Image (cartoon, rainbow, N blue to C red; front, side, top):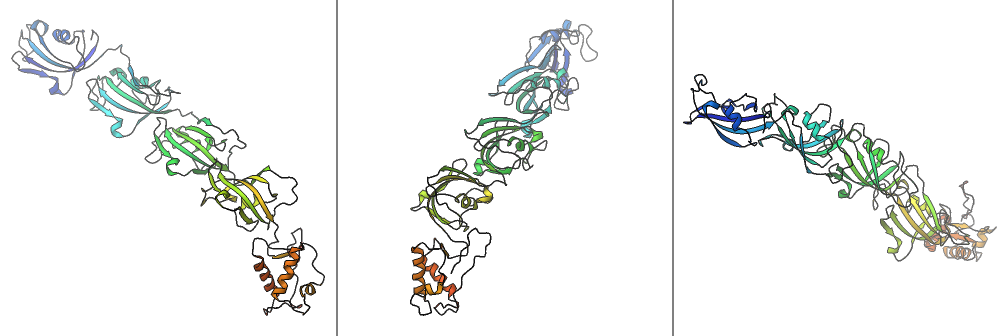
Length: 524
């Protein structure tokens, strides 16, 4: 303490006998004065020198350093020794500046507070004597303000400059950079030095755009996301201080949405552009591109910067078709699979991130299907067409040709990756047919069927004839079914009166009605 310092203190003033004649406590207002300027008793001026904040002193002042031989009115007689019990509350000097002490530094500080930045911070505010006047922690709500625009007291704005998110600072602010001679309400008296412990939670500028930090990109990236794509991704959502407010991992379910169509906050819409399947990136979004001044529910406060660490599982476009890549093709390849063929194949089915969903290795025999019979997902059915026996392919199936939005045994809206190898082909017959001629049918078909020439054909005779045509390569039965059942159904179709015999009048050729087919066949 030196001449020119301003002090604020409480006191009780008594005579030697202990009788009180004055007290700042009774008035409820501390005494405020400058030291060494003759504005208080000379004895007090001397006795207060060297005191510390919250120090209590008893200062005994002889008459010549008090009111001398004149006394003071009717209260203090002449030549009276006075005793002052002082409690020093505050001290400052006009030359003082904001005192700043870093209590905790930020580990990763890529940006610090500048003028015109918007900040969110927690604080404890106290007077120099340690009495608390306010705390954001008690309200469970940060103090939010623009720096450098006069929204805060000057000392606080000055102290916040250069702070990093996560940093804790202690500020001591002299009154003329705080609330000055008026104070503030009942909590902050006039001429009070203020002490703030500040934890910076967040900062941004209204001119900020999103920032994207690419953390991992797969070696193979043949396609990047664009507006209109439908994407599935996992994410961790945090604030700048690292506190998590949401995560898809805990729900064990990806977040699924269209890109660039306004289904998510605008900053995320922008940040999801140009990603690769399997990519990991960090997207930092200022509040005006996130949840704004209102925030979102109880989890995201108003004006909060949000950070999303995302992992792209897959994406597709509703206009996507099946993607087929041939990884091995045997030579020669004289016969390929087509609609209505019965095929057997080995396969592995996985998500684009490599998660295996299904494999034919789990079964004792290859998977089999009649192509075009709607027995497997459309994308796989399409991808199995045009293959040679021994050929291997990868087939990428978008969800609208796979298991759709609902999924089922696979996640909803998942793009599927198949690795397939064709094991065998049994050529099929057109839809609605049970048998087709591979060569011209006999000119006199009934006579050929009526082997014993008794003018009627029972099931046994009919069956022998059909099997003979198949064995000689002249005809083909519908594959993937019991031949006896197929032949029995063929016989029932021709035995129109259901008497167990086919006559010449009953026998008719079925004419191919589908003009769009390249080959036309006649069937019994």
